[in-house]
Length: 235
Image (tube, rainbow, N blue to C red; front, side, top):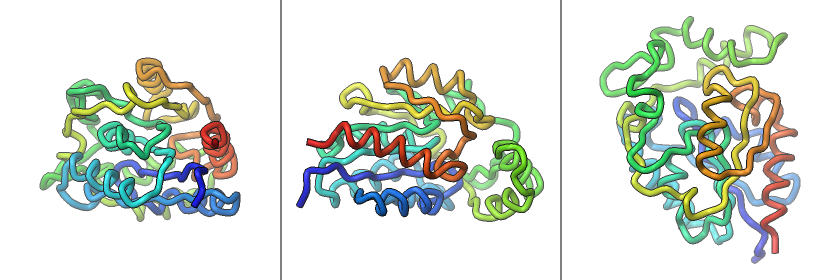
């Protein structure tokens, strides 16, 4: 048993725990206990509360202290569940650090982007495969082979509409210290919007020169950021 913090990573919409595979491997190589969980709202119609319950269950099963990391939509359930006693520090990665009464949809002005196709209580990233590939490719750094976007787009699954409309009722960043990893080249969650959320949450801001998914674009650099945060929490 060690007091060294564990690291729990929570993915964004349309994806799964798989998006952190490279980062988790590097963290474990560095001696950190790290894991990610799959949120029930991906590939279903489950709401945000179900995601927050999944985060709570994972925290219940982890000896504290825990560094709780949320990417993109994953910032919502970590905000809802992050006041758990095991949580020592919150990390938002290009994430929705919402306040009470807010949802992803409301924070975007009350309507979902036109390219998010809604059908049967689920939201699809783009109305078809070509649109999905184009959206993924736009966030990649210049020179990335086209097949990389095609391969990643094939892994995306529909996201529950209810999860994007679910309002936060608990706000962990008002009770726990937080760091915001701001992705400066992000075309999916604009950096100025990230800055607004991070500033409002009183989070320390760490800027990284990547697109929306730094743990995929630069896993070594992303892990260095997480390790630096976790190291400040060691006894």
